[in-house]
Amino acid sequence: QVQLVESGGGLVQPGGSLRLSCAASGFTFSSYYMSWVRQAPGKGPEWVSAINTGGGSTRYADSVKGRFTISRDNAKNTLYLQMNSLKPEDTALYYCARGGWGAVSEDYWGQGTQVTVSS
Image 1: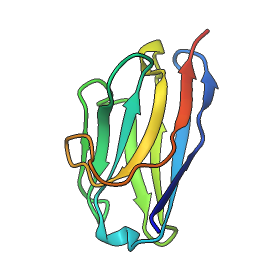
Image 2: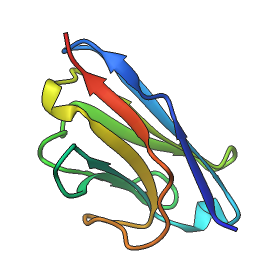
Image 3: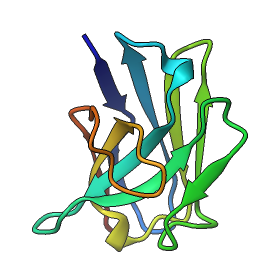
């Protein structure tokens, strides 16, 4: 069955960096666009970023553009999100998702990893 397992979240000070990973299994990873979605407490899910099958095309929400970088390693069936210059408003549960080119995916999501940005 499809499994998406995120890791790499944690507590970081404003201005800091984190790298999230998402290990995929149960499907042909290299055949799917992938994305990251986040959900802050009391808010709905927010699409963050997406990447095409080969990794050569990416998209970002305006709120993270220039600070976050999405990438993938199809040989390792792994999706990444490098997050730099983190702000308190980036605090959320971060999910990787199958699909989701520019909008919150309606396909499979992982269980999420918590990112907290606080001094």
